Length: 630
Image 1: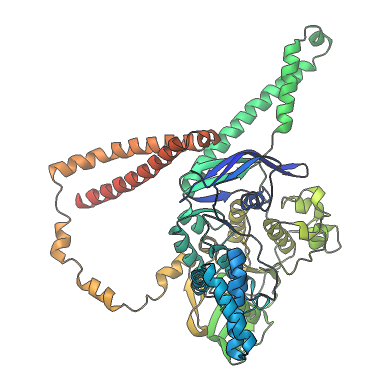
Image 2 (image 1 turned 90 degrees about the vertical axis):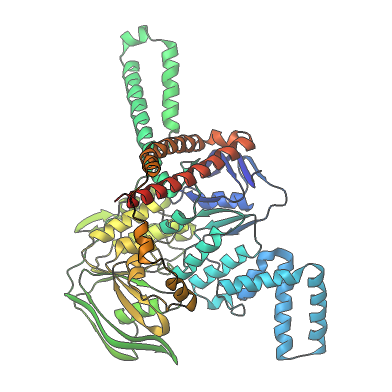
């Protein structure tokens, strides 16, 4: 039985449909990644699932008693509530009792009074009646796993830490269906890795929106794409989706070309004049009208962002040089004995836990802060463009045009003057949105606006603090291409592992006690280069039990007749399994698949899982036999 089912659901904002007769089912144990371009309506679909919005048409069925929790895309606003209060609030009514007990116990410990003692006893009784103690332990466990201090106020936390708190609020109720909208935004790599492990073992169902390709590749068991109001299910992993989506788009383009050719021929026929009107077939005229209506209702795929960067003048060869730099906040050492030389054209990634000092390091390099000790030199002719992860440089009440043009109607890109309206259209902002306030934009649209603002200024030093948050994957890949071709210097703070691998040439990593290490390459290169932790006794014991050289040599013996026959048969077996897998994936990717009987759906999906495991075993066995056959 599914946890949730969409049956011909439609939703529109104004004249633009976000969903049209959408069909979708999610079952327990599935990890579904929802993909789609910015502005397609992914967050709106999640709000429909969570009950925060209602459809214009169609029905949404939720299994009776099922618990649904939602982590929203935007970080919560500043609040005077403590972290404990926010996380406990995910338990609805009992959460308030747990928070009251927590605060009363703290007050009683600090200044005991008979009134507080009486109040604590009343809260204890209420918690015992509602199984509150086990739930209170669950709150403490989530706080511990996310490394959160429950007594800190929300307004004292950075965006990354607030994101952790809201994640804890979503996790604490142990929902049957967990809805995560860009869960990795503002999280550091350590917490992202923990979250991956947690969700891999999560017993309920998961639907998540994410641009983080490493995250979705590891987690997703099914891809659901929202494209021009339609939901399409793609069983399998992200790589399967990319391959089959490319084939689908090619087929769609071919069908549209044939349709447009037929429409053009019919339009030419209807305009032939008197001779055509005398012999005109009324059925053919009606068919032409139907073709016109079909063409009018066709929704074209959203175009790609046209990313172009205004190049500044060439900076000096040396951009930054730091020698034994320290920086302290009071008695706290943030950066210790930091030395680096950054040359023109270097693309530097900066990696570290939230609060480690990444923004502080950038401010030191840019001269906004002075080092406590050491020498720091800056190069000449630096033109800096800064991308702020909190988007604080955007005025919420300003119009989109004013945010980029700053009072001017034109911008200059690579020496050519261009109207702001045309420039913003290249970032997929239609003319009717240009006079809308910034506050009406979604997270992804604000990021695109920040990129438009950033790239309209001449710069030879790009400083980008988490630029990938909320961007769709296609725009993210275009940004990677732009940075790859950029001739200036790049400082990139990011927790997106794939983006770091594709965009930077070296990485500064915040290690322990304020130390910053420098490594060649991106994130994956750093993992290979970093020093391994000291071996434990258990690991040393495991090393001692490694097979002897004689055993290893025995594994490379010549294949027996039976094993050789098995090796010869494996390619054909793999081909047969892959053909069946492709056939099942194709049938499961159409909406009609989920309109079958529940047993048929379960059987097909179970067979897909079996095929995947069998293929993995076949490939592993093939590699094993091949290695022995050398």
